[in-house]
Image 1 (cartoon, rainbow, N blue to C red):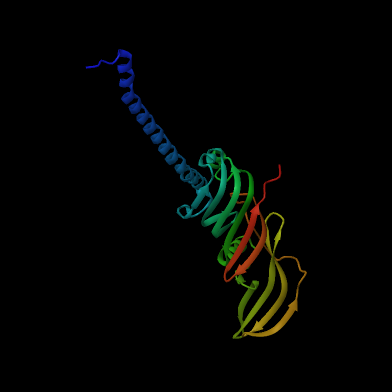
Image 2 (cartoon, one colour):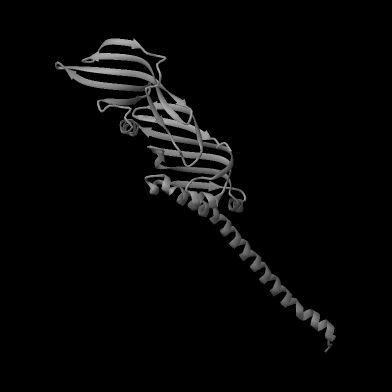
Length: 255
């Protein structure tokens, strides 16, 4: 029987140990990688929950808040870099009026997560695009106008697809007299929605009795929208049956 040199036997004996060590190392690397992937995937949920809690005080229905964030790589969220952001909910406090529904969508956003959580709003450093959509009900607008003495109890603003209308109906000698002021909406400085009158009409039992052109008259009703959890400049208004749709974009406050 041929005997191997001692050195040769030792070299052959280390082979299985080296293989085991390599396998263990690969397993550790794989486990660390899997843990890192799971950790990074949890950040959109964590940051979204942070922003949701920050905005709870700005809405009347906190349970309706839905927040979605996304970034690549995910750990960029730690620094407040958000590639895509969507926030939606109901009952947003817009100053002295409340929006029935709202939606905020943006891209390329940088915000301060800690300051947002502390101040109850989105503290934004910059945004490539950030659009806001609010839906105000006819009832909310009338309530505001009456609370602030701009609208007598017999008057009411009606919102129609063709535009706003201020109406008054009363019974005079068993006849129904309807007074209507038709107009259009405009945005005044400070995100104030103003009703600009165009035509005054009087109807008796549904039959037109008189029409007057009152275009050029100063706005008779004004509704300020804001402040909001995001600094916004309103740039478009649309009316529907019983609703006012307000569209705006992110407008950083002047230093």
